[in-house]
Length: 127
Image (tube, rainbow, N blue to C red; front, side, top):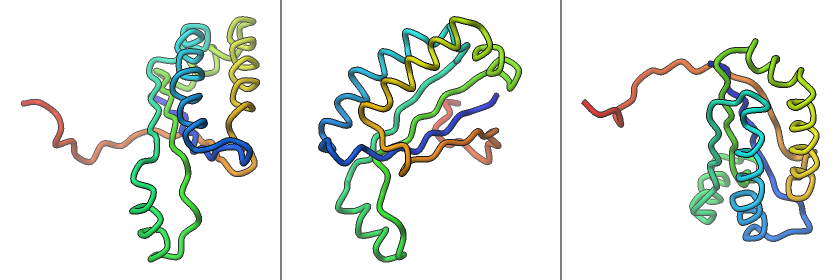
């Protein structure tokens, strides 16, 4: 599978609470509505928690400020991902998502890339 990883920071003009609420309750359902059009198989939002602990760890390592979270979107293959963005429905879905993301994400301070997972271990799997 191919996975899009989108590491996000909020726009400066909204609070962290507003950002997380919009991302979860408005943008998440929008992604679910267009998932078939873009041929996505899985979508996860990971919201940053424990900001004080995160800041302490970051400061001790002289790291950049923390992100507000991570979005992960999976496709069966690079070909499926490409096919999902090449149809009129997929292209419209992409425009819709981009327009909505501009309401809460600071694009200049966020990043996006594609990955392929390599599982090393999974102790959460049921036996």
